[in-house]
Length: 341
Image 1 (cartoon, one colour):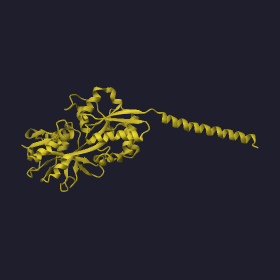
Image 2 (tube, one colour):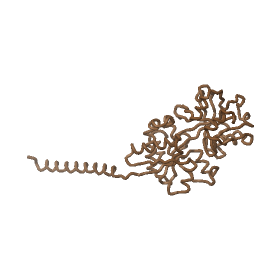
Image 3 (spheres, rainbow, N blue to C red):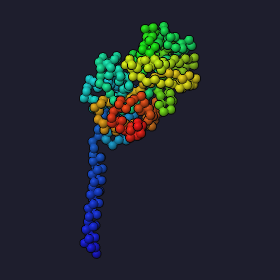
């Protein structure tokens, strides 16, 4: 038979165990019972790499997060996204948008294609990093001076990477905009025009892995290389890029490695811009933190759905951004992961 003391001990132990079990059950129930929280994601035009990668983040959130749901939708582009949040301020706490450093700077300065100054945004992380240059079939075109009087085929006028930024470097970095004929054709038509002899230079480019310096050519640039024509790649030049930045264009110099374009190019001084997940400053810290953790923990999954996703890297998520540019919730996640010290 048990003594009274043993019985009291058993009762106390049982009670304590019951409390611990209930606490565990209640804790699990509280976690499970947390309602799903959905945030919207305005991405980019259908069919672009950015659209696919942004949609992938939606799928990652559904498969891997207990309560955060990211709902991605197509949009006409980054300029539209910025204007949308300005026109509907109630979306600023519930919406992630596709944007980037260059378009964000143009918006905050109120520079074309924006007709007024818009509030600054904060970054969650980069999806793609883009680098561009000018290609020609004319061996006599070796410098900015040789471009005077020539025809340059760029992307469509509102395309930041393929038109706005290259034009800005020609204008402010080279100082020869009035001495050239710029034609806004679109990236692929510009390459076609170069091969047909209708322009003298065309915009070319690719996507960058920040950790390995690997360059994946854009489809139209791959087509240009595959044409078999003798090509010459013209650098924008680091000095020209640095002259352009103070004029309201947030671009960062970058040197393309020797052989990265066609196996025989010399190092090419150009610049980078990025397509990024961005939010308003008032976007909730917790949601920004959880979204960034999804990017960090599942970055390898983006390469499973698109070739450009294979270029994503932890270093690349924050390349080109200062800590003050990053949303506080995202910054906390990057510091916890050791990506930012």
